[in-house]
Image (cartoon, rainbow, N blue to C red; front, side, top):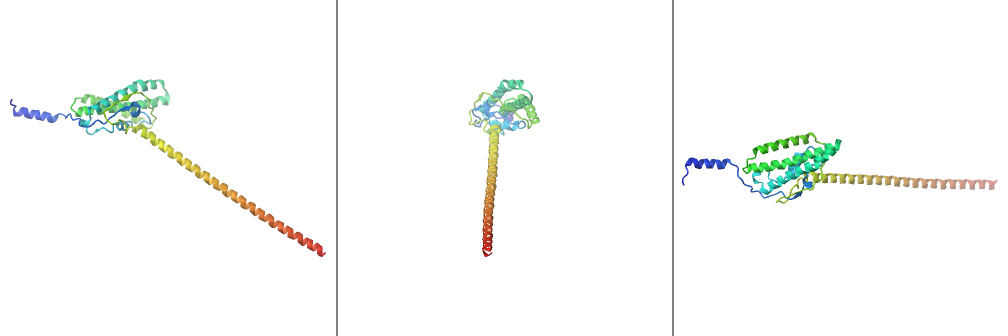
Length: 255
């Protein structure tokens, strides 16, 4: 069978133009409970970074290397976070009022950022590996940008996380270690800061007690010294009185 030079060149150009389905990277996302990767707690304003920290083990700079297993795990994160939104956040927000409702809404927005970030990463991997997902990627990116903007607008406000019983499976070693990120590490830092502050307070209290004890000791010493001085003065006065009495007796005897 013979091919014309034009046909061969056309096929060569096509093979260069299409993305390569590599998936060379090993799977890095592992099993995790939703509650362990949730970023909804704390405060609003940094949801994008907190969400990306959950997936920090992924080679996002080379999405063509993201394995099929990791893409499946990303899809599970999307589904579980969506379930948490509809089954946990929405009913809780409907039943709450005032600041409580606002904190829950902030937590819901952060959960949306986590959900959509997982979707974007999966779509980017699919696109890099040759799938035509451009329209879907643009649609989901618009949603993500909108929720990130809402999170930033609420920066500094309280954000509430809700417990939700769901598991995510993966073929890799870990999911959300960096995300503890977002939650456990921050909580640990807060706990350490609290412990340090408590230790400082205890040390300061001990210093105050020591200073007070020193003052009491000094006061006691001063009292003892004053008492001793009084005793010495009294003894001297007694000696003088006795001497004067003796002299008076002597004078009476002379008379």
